[in-house]
Length: 302
Image 1 (cartoon, rainbow, N blue to C red):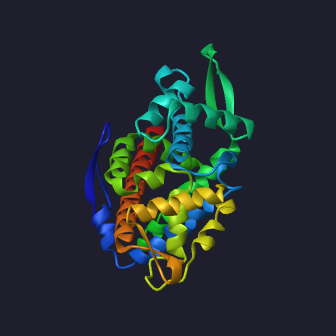
Image 2 (cartoon, rainbow, N blue to C red; image 1 turned 45 degrees about the vertical axis):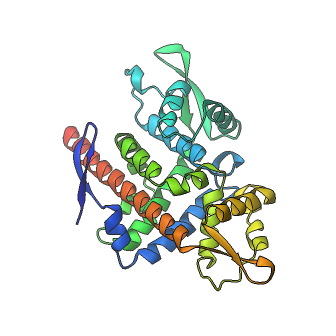
């Protein structure tokens, strides 16, 4: 069963809702897949430009790919310029113009992005993702659909899971129409906004969850989490700060002798599950938009 979302310029699109996903009996299995798949694409050495991941950088990467996919040389409004990138990223509210400038410069330096001259106006430089960035984006796309395929293996999400490059381009063009719905979903999860914005914060807490940290009887120590610092390209002090803020916000508690053991509270698990379900619902929406677009484009080509 699906519910409709009104998408600007497209109309109503039937897709899975967060409530349906949360109610699925296999949601715990999908949650585990979500954590492991996202940890994989956000690890140091995998995430582009040798930075740690946060919502600002992840959003910037996604929008670079989307703008590139929607580029029409004859239509100036589609040109993937730095100013166009900044205007679009600003809608999400996670990255300042200064952060985007430094991140774009680093992407160029590390071979994930190229600046190319616009043929219609040689004063303009366009941002073009290299194959390195497109390859990472295909892995990121597949990571979003792995938990959905756990829940709904038939008919599944084949093109996304196969990392199909043609589907990637259609998916990226389709995602632009879903931006408003994606932004609304992200900002409806206010309790975890800080952890989205702070470098690698969410994935470190997810790793604690994956280690069994939601069990009140767990024997996980802070040192076990600090060891994750090099994995996600942050300092040990940064990990300690994340844990301190999580404790302050009632997402994490300590127990045992000298409060040596840490575990996540049911409140955090509930907030995280709502975010996962909302994220998967938006992925399903984008997937269905892409399938519709592919059908339209195939019909136009006949």
